[in-house]
Image 1 (spheres, rainbow, N blue to C red):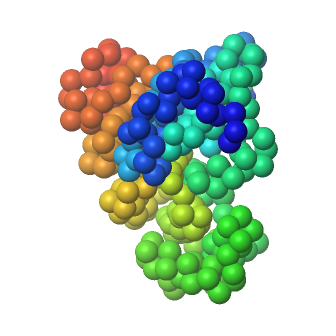
Image 2 (spheres, helix red, strand yellow):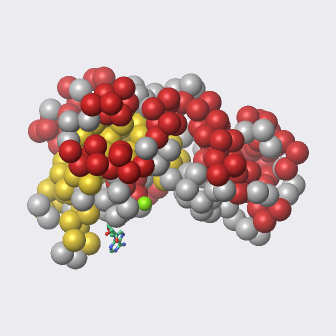
Length: 273
Ligand code: ADP
Ligand code: MG
């Protein structure tokens, strides 16, 4: 995008070559308010390509808003977000220095998959139709290729036999695995999960976490909002604790789950562990 170069020079952003590999995300100083409520407060986060980041924090702390900001479903008031060193949004103190056009936002959004708590499958479409919709519309794939891709992805999440089922005929865990396959169908560089197992019966949580664990090995950059501490400890490179829109602490699970520095992190973990 034409104007990103000047801003990048101004911020020194492109010096950070480590963040130019496939799927690297950098979030710099983003803030967002809803009316008087500051929901994100100067959030700073670097997600190297292929990294797995778990985001923890109490309800209402801004976790979903942060994911939505990364995906440009929410416009931030301040700060910038980049993918692979390309600035994808920038504004400062209400003076917009750089802003993406809607069509550019759509293009970038296609590189970022999102999986929601409530699956959000299209209820009136079969599993196959759910999976081929975006590849046909967004990526312009031929139908045969889209179907082949859907078959591959369903095999990967262990649901080949459900290709003609409707979402209502599937368990929650199966629906979520289809939702993950659907997100993967766009070959995203970054996958965002917003409490992907919170709506599931406990016995169905494991099958979804197993699929995510498998993805963690494939080099897609993953960001997972979750309360599954055991899972975060096993899979995440970095655990981020957020409260009242601020990142209070970030570090490797081996440290955060044993010797968190911030008392609020320790209090929170004591409650969920
Ligand atoms: P979390 O995902 O950590 O539970 P959210 O990011 O969903 O938190 O929300 C953070 C805060 O922002 C909450 O107080 C929530 O009520 C508020 N909020 C979220 N979205 C909106 C919105 N569209 N309008 C007004 N307030 C919102
Ligand atoms: Mg949320």
